[in-house]
Amino acid sequence: MRPKPIPMRSCSVCREQLPKRELVRLVITASGLAIDRSGRLAGRGAYLCHKTACWQRAYESGVLVKALRLELTDQDRSVLLEYAANRDAQ
Ligand SMILES: [Zn+2]
Image (cartoon, rainbow, N blue to C red; front, side, top):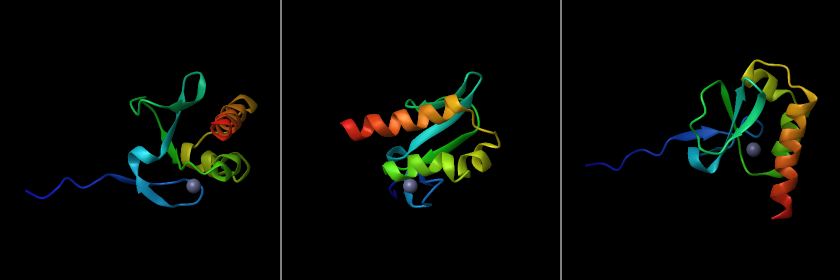
């Protein structure tokens, strides 16, 4: 028996490959951009790593717009920045 391969995903901003569970999944829901903490939300998703810079760049660089095929609203932007800010506070 070979060990199960660990599912790898890459950060949408820095493209670093990491095990899926070490990345944060973002999903577009009916109410806008959401942080998928359970990893079970349905919908088009994108992954970000834990570097705060990636969260700040995610909005400005436009990579999320490409990955999610959706224009981000100001509310979506605050979801990203709030998450990044709260991570810094920990
Ligand atoms: Zn990254």
